[in-house]
Structures are given as C-alpha cells and as structure tokens.
Image 1 (cartoon, rainbow, N blue to C red):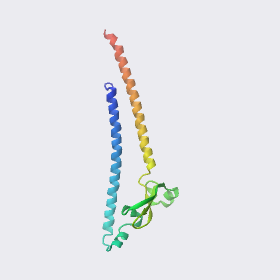
Image 2 (cartoon, rainbow, N blue to C red):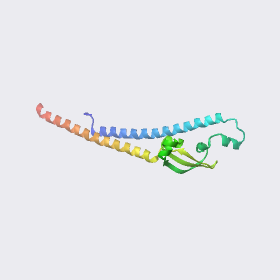
Image 3 (cartoon, rainbow, N blue to C red):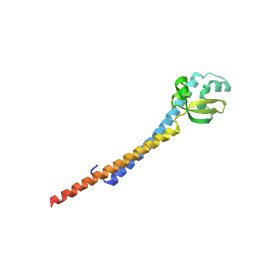
Image 4 (tube, rainbow, N blue to C red):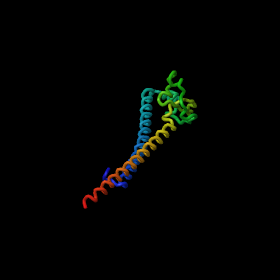
Length: 167
C-alpha cells in the first residue's frame, strides 16, 4: 500500500466494485437457471409417474397436480408476493408459505383454477439487500480512501523530514 499511487488504488477499488456487481448478476442468473432445471426435473418425474394416459383431456388432468398448474400452463398473477400470516406458517404449515413466508395468488388460464404458490423472493427484501450491499461497499470505499491518503501523507512527511539529514 505504501508504494501505490492514488490512481492505482482508485482503479483497484473501481475494479472491486465492478466485480461485485458482476457477481451479483451472475448469482441472479444461476439462481434462475437452477429454478428452471428444477422445474424440468419435476416435469420429467410427473411424465414418468403418470406416463400411460390416453386422450388429450386426461393427460392435462392427470399429468400434474392442480396446485402446480402454474408450472405447466399460462397463468396470471392476481396477488404478488403477499406476506403469509403467522397462523399459516406455524399452525397450518402451508406449503406455499414455508419456503419464504410470502406467496403469489395465481390464476391458471387453461384449467381456470386459482392456486397459491410460494413467491420466489419478495422484491422489497431483495432491493433492500442490494441497497445495503451498496451502502456497505461505499462506506468501505470511503474509509479505505481516507486511510490510504492519511498513510501516504505520513510517509511523505517522514521522507521530507529525513531529507535534511542527508545534507
């Protein structure tokens, strides 16, 4: 740190911020692809489990449970990321509330049923986490910059004080 210039340190800090943002987007992409692969595995399981049906109507009815219609057909979100009540989480242990504590009310188009599904992640908490991450990084940036400039000033004073001793 003693031999780095302000330009080098600021470049390093900007690179760290860039990598942090890159990691954030990569994490979002992998999370989405994991959810898609999990959905594909569930579809394959239901096809092997209920594979011997005949007729188009029977296949739609028996291929998957009615509460999972949103995975297999077009749907419309009626209520988005609503918080579950404590009663639903603790007493009933509702499947749509156990993972995140939030749920979506979904209306499936083909079967015209309304079901509840777990909300992947509440948008407000994600946004809050990102802003918290951003603020912490900004604070670390400011503290690092101030400590670096202070240390550089100390070293320059020490060099300046040693200079007269050599003459």
